[in-house]
Image 1 (tube, one colour):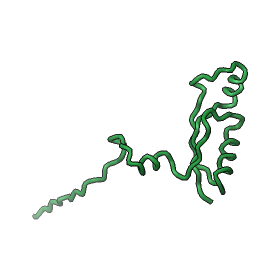
Image 2 (image 1 turned 90 degrees about the vertical axis):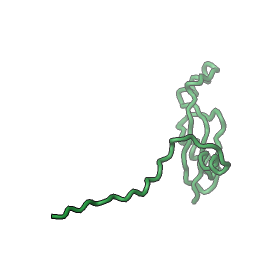
Image 3 (image 1 turned 180 degrees about the horizontal axis):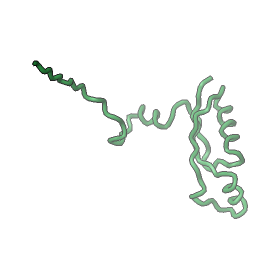
Image 4 (image 1 turned 135 degrees about the vertical axis):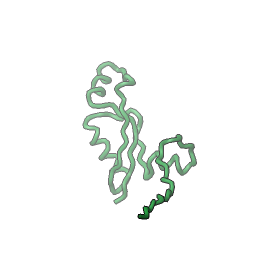
Length: 101
């Protein structure tokens, strides 16, 4: 069973209820959704993600893929921000001092 990455924007149940009443969606009520879901196919992954919203609604349709956004950007060769990754330690030899009596 492959893992699918589901990403999108959604309104929580309370925000969706308020949006239906007033007809307005405030930018502060939109939340990001990004999860890895194990499923047999993309449709099943989307169904599981939608059920996970617990009454919420998608504002920007969810995108289902086999690659995360990070892997996709790296494969395209997009620039990375400096300082985000740990440096490899330098190979330093410790010199032991021997004392002779």
